Length: 274
Image 1: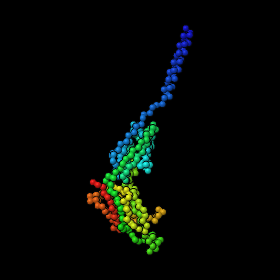
Image 2: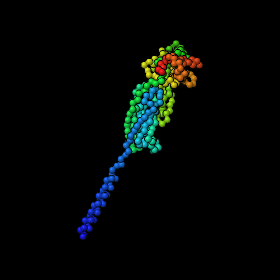
Image 3: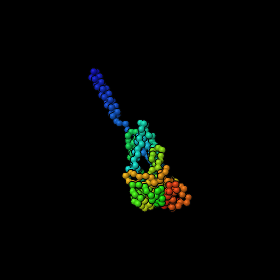
Image 4: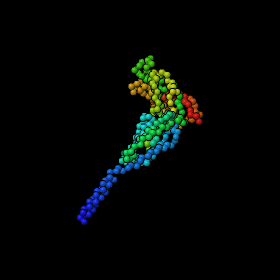
């Protein structure tokens, strides 16, 4: 009888040990994280020049961070939760391009579990409703043919302005959530020393601007070494070419004038078809 009790006690202890072992094994198994799945949708499959492309990234798990590399690494942006909370499961992004062509977008999405999913998309931007600027010629500006560099005497051609032109147009500056824009220098010419040859040929350039937008024109005297001055001696230091004003007749030649500062500039443009 005593032997039976000892055997029963031994068996009971062994069962407790086995149960305890099973419990420890279950606790050692790490919790399986929910898989991170990512999807991107856009408002168009064929964006065009100066068009705002809207993209929405949707995920199966709450988002902690999104990194975006745009156009082969030329532009990098990131959005990360700064409050400790997640960004939700959808994030809106915006893109805009100045010239036609193929652009590669690379994304890295990190969820709240620190799981990462990389993916990429290639988009093709078409001309759309963009006007192409073929050439520009500076006809006149304030104090043309007169002294801009007084360190030279009245007969020295170096006294004349060293002319540089620049164009600005609206640029996307905020990629996430709500897009915002500002005017940005879009094209800067080489310097034409001493007013030499004020005709600028852009036929080999991709200077496109949507016909619903305006272009700001600046003209400067460039003395090198970041030293120069505006050739438009009033405020603002630019003049505007608004293509909407010409959209009905669509002339090949457009002249921008301001008699108050003796400014005149002639453009040759190519309008989109349709």
